[in-house]
Length: 469
Image (cartoon, rainbow, N blue to C red; front, side, top):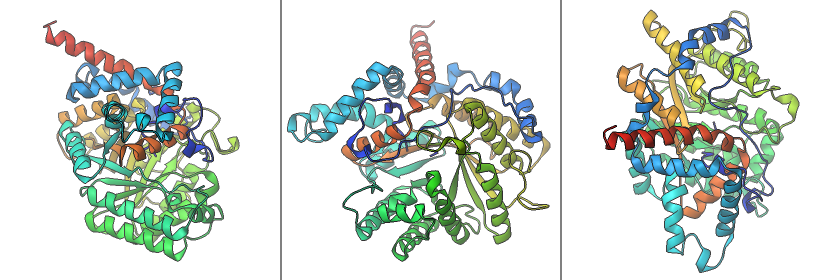
């Protein structure tokens, strides 16, 4: 993953106007403490064996991992996840937000009515968004850094919709270009910026569906954005696309990687791989062979998946457990830089290229397993794959904070690097953006109960600590 920040709103009744013609997608995941892997491949077996203890209990008690969060954030997360974990409250909230965003009267306008603006700003906006402009976004980034996060993944809320009726290629490309250049300018060296190639507009989406190259105008904008990111050492994360555009997605991304992923900066451009697709391991293996042959660093963002509701079922694993097995097996192979099922060599005697890996996951079992491999490698004195973890701002803080607590304990170069993905833009832009992501990621609401329980425990701990119990 791939800003999809308000996925928890996805069970609202009635589509948001911006999503009526959009494709719907869902994360193919289960609750964080997922079942054991069923595959018996050498790589995955060792991954599972190594982490039986780690998956059962965290290295640092959950009583203390959330202590780094401000009380206001713990309270806000508890309240919002209490709503999102209730289908009735969730549906009511969606109806209200949809009406507010569609309103043309002062009384219910989210920008003009100060009471409504304040209520939304202090809840949904602060929970999932960085700010309206550069100063406010920078302030949010500094707050995340104080908590202990290594950096952020910034995404711009103003999107060019691929199904817009008044599409104009020149205008669409310019909106995409300007938005990304502004976002790169906000980011600090080492941060990430999220983007979508299909965000270049309707013309780009049609080209991707036809497995065609980007137009000269699109290619020029793509290279300008990559050049700006390269100059500032900001990394780009093209988000996952649907299967019917996946061939073009990978071709466009590999082309940019070949041009910009060279030198000490490593992977300026990453590519996203969805573990719920049966074809992912094979595609990734061939891309690793290409990177080795061409001599560039391959940046890999691994997610479970995003388009479960719209993809044809034969493209996808039959169960969440199979997706978990595929995700964890690929992750283990990448961390060890060793081929083995499910990530088998694409060519005889294939060797790994230089790689940078981001595990974008809200699954605590996965992060604990990955950290167990890292610890074993450190003990053996093995070289470590460059690894980063990512979660959405306002979600899965219990997963993020467990990694942060471990980083504080290790306090060395091999400590976990954790990033939060956040969105910037005006109140209206961000809420529309978050509702689109909510419509796409319908499974996320069912996974917020873990966050609610974790925040409830943290509130109880702080209350008892205050009274000396």
